[in-house]
Amino acid sequence: MSRRKQIKSKQQFVEALELEKSGDTTSALKLYQKAVTTDPSNSHAWNRQMVLFRKSRTREQEVELIKNAISGYQKSAESRKRDWMEENRKKADSSRELAKMLGLLEETGLPKGDDTLIEKWQTRLYLLEYRIKNARKKKV
Image (cartoon, rainbow, N blue to C red; front, side, top):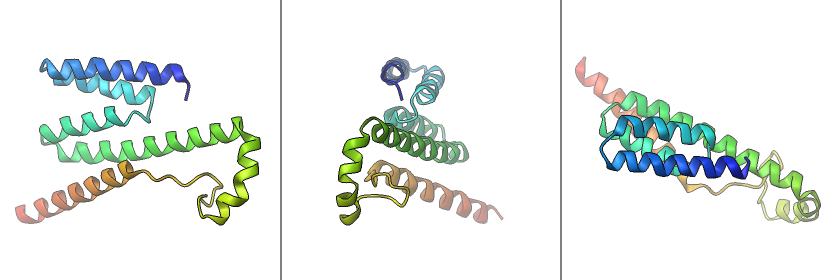
């Protein structure tokens, strides 16, 4: 991810936040979506979208959004790790054995991620899917 895209995504996020504060949630949502398209690692833009979906009571859409957020965020994080390893090959090679011994590497050879954000999104996803499933049972 280029630094330029990260900056652009942050600018889009700030503009969307201003639109949301002024009450234009539809335009804000579109701009948040642009921000995560520009930079999928922009967790703030993903979170604001989830809040807007939660307020509008569209659970099915929120489920899809959370699935997209998890997937996009994880791919972006993995890409950043790969990019760092390519740029810092010598450092990565010299510390690989120690990292393996300490259990800090995934099976792919990339560093393990300790991302509580993904865990929170997965918990929210589980709860939403559970509520949707049980709401359908009550209607029948």
